[in-house]
Structure formats: structure tokens, C-alpha cells
Amino acid sequence: MLSGSFNALGRHWKQLFGMALVAYGLAALLFGGAVAIAVSAVYDHFDPVFHHDYGVEPARSDVAPLVIAGAVLFVVSMTVWTLSLALMYAAVPAVLQDAVLGRRGTFGAVWRRAWSRFPAVLGTLVIQMGASLVASFVFVALVVTTVLASSGSGHHAPPVALLVLFIVGFFGLVPVGIWLWVRFAFAPAAAVLENQGPVEALRRSARLVKDAWWRTFGILMLIGMISGAVGWFVQLPFTYGGVFAAMPLTMADGSDGAKVAAVVIMVVLYLIGTVISQFLSATLPQLGAGLLYIDQRIRRENLAPSLVEAAGVPPVPTGPADAR
Image (tube, rainbow, N blue to C red; front, side, top):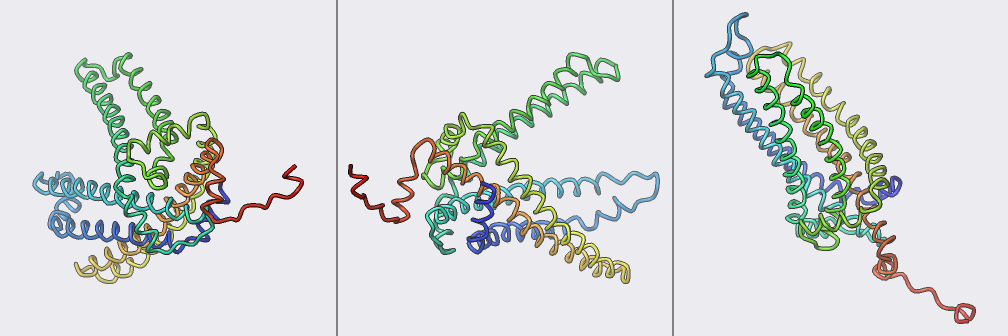
């Protein structure tokens, strides 16, 4: 599965990278524009907050706009990241379908197929993220309850019962989250290759993963770790390159124009690195999940003859020995 993922990426990288440029490039431009708007809106509040006299607290009228701008940027980043991820999750199975059948699809064909299934794939991601948010909310509520109970009782340490509940909740949510991640790993592939809706795609994934959870978990974890490491090493030179490229501007000229130019250089290089890094770290795991999806269908549903027929492979002639 690992070699198959890299082989599919090597043979169809043009279509995949083209989709990544559209998905992550647009996301980077939208987020970069949001950052520029936010910085220009709260620029006058930076100096009073970060360059105030020692021992003097900054005014709330200066802190509040920065907090609001940060919260808005967080929401924008999560939104554009989810949309770009859904588009790539829809594109990978479309490319993989051609790869399994030995065909080389064009970027236009991949785009049409991915865009037509984009709402369904987005729906699967939203449902999974919604479940994660609910679990996170439960955990945060547990933390707040523990702290409030501790402060209300007048003791520095929280009550033993709440402390035990906190530990059990934390270590219980992590395994459940991993279990659900593996259980629904095939949902994007099912949504694209079987034209399933979001809920039915999740159910389909759960049925295929059943009795093969550990095998699926091991392969996806290995591919995810490798792709994450590769993406991190790709991102690193762009991040530090932007810092080193901006240093001469800030050191030679302390004007506002030089500061803005330095920030632009760092942001542009960081976004370029992010596009390439996200392409690798998001594409490889989905290629692995798509190959595992097809493998499970071959094992359980005898999909191989249908794939051979769809690929246009001529049937093997039956000889006299076979006839007997």
C-alpha cells in the first residue's frame, strides 16, 4: 500500500498537484488576504499592547481588537482549510480511479469529477469534525467544571472524584477519536467512487473497515507519519527562509514600510511552503486510504473482475485443457 501510494503520486502528480494548487492556493490567498485586512484594521493597537512600559498593563481598548481579530482569523483559517481539504479529498479518489484502471486522466476530467462530488465529501468531513468538536466541548466543559469546583470549595487541589473523572475523560476521548478516524477513513473514497451521500459514505466506510480495523490503522498510521515528516521538512526551509530574507529589511531600516515588506516576504514564503507541504501531507494518506478501500472491496466483494472489465483487458482465451 505504501509503495502503491508513492507510485500513484509519481505517475499522476500533475493532476494532483494541479488540484492542490487550486485548493491550497486559493485557501492561501484567502487566508493571506484575511491576515492583511486584520493587520491593517488593528495595526494601531500593536504598539500599545506589545511595546508598553514595564509594569503597566495595556488598555482593554487596545487588547480587545487584537483578540477579536485573532478569533476571526482562526475561524477563517479553519473554514478555508476545511474547504480546501474537502476538494483534495474528492480529487484523490478521482485520480486513483484512473490509476487503478491504468488510465491517465486529464486535469479537466479530474476537476469535473472532484467538483461534482465535493459537497458529499465536504459533508463527511463536517460530520466528523462536528463529532470532534462535540468531544472537545465535553472535555473543555469537564476542565471548567473541575476548576470551578476547586475554586468553589476553597481548596487548591480539585476534588478527587472530579480529578479522576478528568483523567478518565481525557484518556477516553483520545482512543475513541482514533477509533472513529480509522472507522470512517474510507468515507471520501466511497462518496466519490460510489456516488454516496455523506451519511451513507460514512456507513459504507464503517462496513468495509469492520474486522480489518488494526490492519487499516497500521497502514494509515505509517503513511501518515511518513507524509507528515516529509511535509514538515519541505515546510522548514520556506519558513526560516522567509525569516532570514526579512531580517536585512528590519535591521537596515526600521520604518513602517520596511516592516510591512518584511511581513509580506515572510507570509508569501510561508504560504508557498504551506501549499507544497499540504499537498504531500494530505495527498499521500488519502492515496493510501483509497487503495485500502479498493483492496477491501476486492477481498470482500470480488471487485477484481469488474476492474478488469472496466480497464478493457481482453479475457484470457480458454484452451482445450481448461474446457476439460
